[in-house]
Length: 172
Image 1: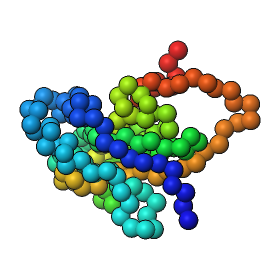
Image 2: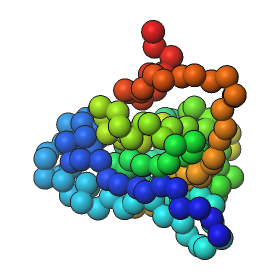
Image 3: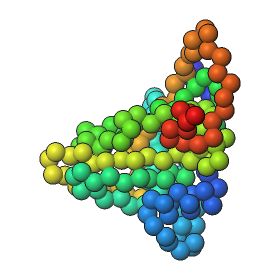
């Protein structure tokens, strides 16, 4: 039986609003509240699925070569020595060459405690070389996350604590 090592949560409304407006521009509070209220926590489709599907909060349409940053409204609390690795959903990758711009999203266990509440974003690109426009409906799975345990070296003595997202662990 698989170990239970994590729990998904929604970020606060304020954090979602900030991330949404950064990605898509200003909208009314009521419109963003309606989107926030519909956010679904990631889930597995079947008992044999390794990946937890993340659902788009809005309708997305990406022509070949287009990129969008998607605020998922999701955060995850997990045990130490575990990581959530995020990938495009297989079908979207196969049909449209959907790519995560950082290839694989790495969500560390301490990201949950960041100032942005550990809000998980995905920057995706339709990398189709067949001229296919990709449409992802609101509440449709577009990315999957898989929990993986990891080890550290025997001489590791890191005690620093994260506070931020992209690139925050290498800032001096």
